[in-house]
Length: 332
View 1 (spheres, helix red, strand yellow):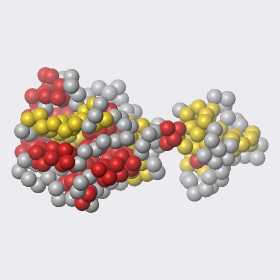
View 2 (cartoon, rainbow, N blue to C red; view 1 turned 45 degrees about the vertical axis):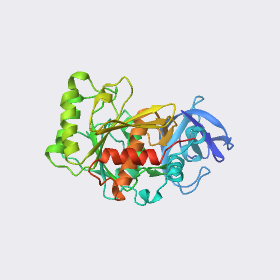
View 3 (cartoon, rainbow, N blue to C red; view 1 turned 90 degrees about the horizontal axis):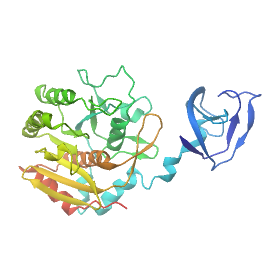
View 4 (cartoon, rainbow, N blue to C red; view 1 turned 60 degrees about the vertical axis):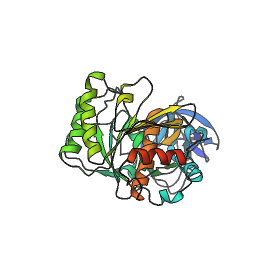
């Protein structure tokens, strides 16, 4: 990965430790280098940066070492906008800003995805509710960052990352493996878990396509969610099977912002595809875009609306469509 020095950083030869005999030189601020992450000496102060606690070091192609506290990911520099910029853009466009006076308080969001990696992101760890089942697989390392990126857009509160609905809580249902293969039996089990155990969930976020032969089973569970007052938000596209789901909020990316009632109990929202900054697995920060990112973003907006006392009418999809039409979200 590529990183950029933001202060003077000591160059250490041979090993990732502070020693009197391994100081090779100093890297000045503003230099970009290609590195890999390695473990090393745990430092709280020193190496050019104060008040940062980290045992993460970088090793360059020449075999020299640098303490990570003196760098920022180039994604922090190159990304067009941050989550907070996007959120402020929403607020600036809202006709009724009181819709966001509460940002997710008392709202629980089920994320059916690849799992949420919490070791690097304490702000996510504090937001996850316990599930009594075999979905989160906490004992195995998460290698697919997709679910972690979704969670970051929703609730992260970290440097350069501001979740859309940071007061909400998450339920982590791991249904996508490291090769991005969807366990559709796992999807159905997760939805049944929510429905049959009356798990206190307000919103369900799903960012994957499904096989046509499982459409009916998944639709059956979504219908139960709908009757229980739980909103399902799904990523979709013109040629995806999820486009055929009903009783859901569908999210896609297009050339321009669009809101359409696809039938009485479904709505499609399309966004222009501007990248988010969000949480990752191998890095502190990552870019995330396309329909999956905007599904999470939409879920976050709906969480804020629910926690602020909106979406109380009998036809919630019509109310959602009216809100998004009256408050267009057109990013830079």
